[in-house]
Each structure stands twice: as structure tokens, then as C-alpha cells.
Image (tube, rainbow, N blue to C red; front, side, top):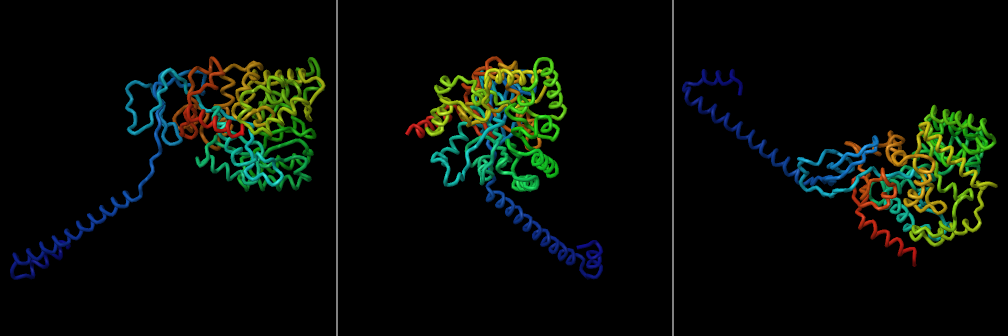
Length: 479
């Protein structure tokens, strides 16, 4: 009630006291109604909050751990790393910090925490392989392949050959419905069998972009015109391409056309092999400089390529312990190749070819070419995940030091995928993909094999859990 109205009532009444009482009763009624409504609103809000039952992201804390952040060659001794959901939210010295209540505590005393590794030229089996596919192409093969990657510390896979319905699998894995590494997938291959004209190449690029594939996969067999149509359309719609270098295209044109990764180094080998002596040295210097100028990444896959070109120790490879984790039919295919190692990439002098590949990688590393870790698993004798550990010695033989090798599977990968997410180092805001090790990998790369557990998107998989699942996979394929 306004001051004017109250004054008017008082002036018109013969009994001011009576009028005041009337006014006070009116005001008290209004206040009472207001308070009742306020209380009812408060109760409603409380009930709504209680009934919504919000889920809390899990918090995990690594305590007293030595952190290898991989942003530089250093070790942060005795740290506490706090994970909230799928993110690293803090990395601080262990002294004097109050740990979050209800957190899962992982004691890292005397251990080393590093970012998870990536397989940058891997493969994931099809979920819908069709009626003519081998019998082992089942759900178990898909799920065991994904778990094998994770079990070896591989927390990210760039799948380099897409299949129908595989984007649904990617969503199920990346959402946590299925256990596995983070997946980024190329679509079905562009090659001489799938593309028959520049127009078809351009249209296929648009289809892949619209479908949601992360990049285009290049295989041999494309004509120069088809390749150019693919590359130009890819730039128009905003999707990258990577993989092989078709013979009609050549590595120089592929680099200049914006191919983001050149995998297997075979394009460089084909370019350099006609040259000898000083001329080859000059050409090697030129192509490396061109590679750097165009920000092209290299995925060497050194171990596999020695196998393919006939330069491997096949009898030793037949004894690989990890072969117990794959179907018998796959293992037999490996053995059949080992008994007669012939492929489209076989050469008269495979050892010389292998030496040239090593030389190329060595010079690229010295000159600062961007290198990504990859093995082409599950190709010949490259068991998913575990094949990473077969690749590391080959990179070492090319003159890469331990930090450079680890960087190719961590920080470099995060830089490559910078438009997708933040990961590859241990720092606040990074995706929580981690490996806990008993020993320092900067001193001994083999220590990665003997890890204490792996974290993917903030989910912790202990060594015990991993070993139990590996035993199940072994038993399944031993039947």
C-alpha cells in the first residue's frame, strides 16, 4: 500500500487508531502471503535439486609420482596429479596439498607418469565385415583389438582404413561404452579400384566429409588427375588426407598438394632410389626441406616395412610371444608370408632398401621434420599395441634419442590433433591419457612394456585388470 493511500485512509477516518489497526492488519496479511510463497518456492527448488540426482565426475589422484610431462625433456619429481573426469586439473608438488575427499588415490611412489602413446597408422577391424569375411571377424576380434592397443599403453589410435558403420564404433569407444583407446578414423580408401575418375574422387571427398570421417586415406593406384581432384576438394571442404604416395603422383607433388602425412616413407624411397652419391644427397636435402616448408608429418612404420620388403628375421618373428593374442588364422597368414616373403614392395636388395629408409628417417629427424609414431598394426607380425615396442628400436637405430621417440607418440600427436582436443602432455587442461611406469623411459624405452597401469579419458586400468583380460584373450584364441 502506498504512502498516499495510507495517508488518505487516516484523514478520512473518524478514529485514527481504528484506521491504523486496519492498515496494520492489511500489511501483515500481505507480508504473510509473500513469505508463504517464498517458502514454497524454496522448498520447490530444494526438491527439484534433490530429485535431479546429478552425477559426479570421478576424481583420481596420483600421489608422490615423478612426472614426465613431455613438453620438454625434464622430470618433475614427487608430484601430485589430480584428474577430474577426463581432464588433468592440477599438477603440483606433493608436499602440503589437501587431497579431494572421495578421490581414488593411486600411490606413485618411486614410479613415473607419462602421457599415453599413440598409434598413428593403425587399423580397427570392421564391425560389419560382410558375408565373405573370414570367420574370425567377429565382435570378440574387434573388442580384443581395441583392448590390445590399450594394454600396451596406446591411448590414441588414428585408424587408417575405415569401414561401413565404423563411425558408430568410434562413438561407442570414445564415449566409454566400449573399452579402448581414443579413436580418430580415416574413411574407406581412395585407390585405383575405388576411384575411376576425377569427378568420382571429388564427390567421394564430399561424402566422407559429410559422413564425419576425420581424414581421407590415400592408397596406390590413383591417377594424377584423380589425386588432384581429391586434394583440391579436400581443401575446399576442410578435411585432410594421408597415407601412401601413388606412383603417378610422386612425393614432391604430394607434399605440394597438402597431403598432411606421408606414411611408410615409401614415397621418399621411390623418389631417391634413381639417384646416387652426391646427387642423391642433394635430392635428399631438397625433399626434406620441402617437407618442412609444407608442415608434412611422417609416419615411418619402420618395423613393418622391413618385414614387407624382405629384410626381416622371419624365424625370430615367428617366436613373438604376443602372437598368442590373435586368431590362429591371422597368425597363419603371417607365417605363410614369412615362408615366402613376396609383396608389391619386394626388392632385389631388401637390406639396401632398409638402410636407405633408416637414412631418410635419420636425416629427417636431424633436420626437424615432424615425426609420428606408427606401426600399421595389425599387419604382418604387428600385434596391436604391442607392435609399438617392436617399432621403438628401429627409430633408435635411425639416431633418434629416447625423448624424441617418446615425443613422436605423445606431444607430436597432440599437436597433430590440436583442432580435435588437448592431449599429449601432462599439464592442466589436458585429456587424462596416461601410463604409470616402474622405471624411467627416458633412460630405458623397454620400461614402457612393464607399466603399472594405463588411464584413458580419466578411466584407470590397473596392471592386474589388464593382465586378467589378456589371459582371457589368450584363452579365447587358444580354443
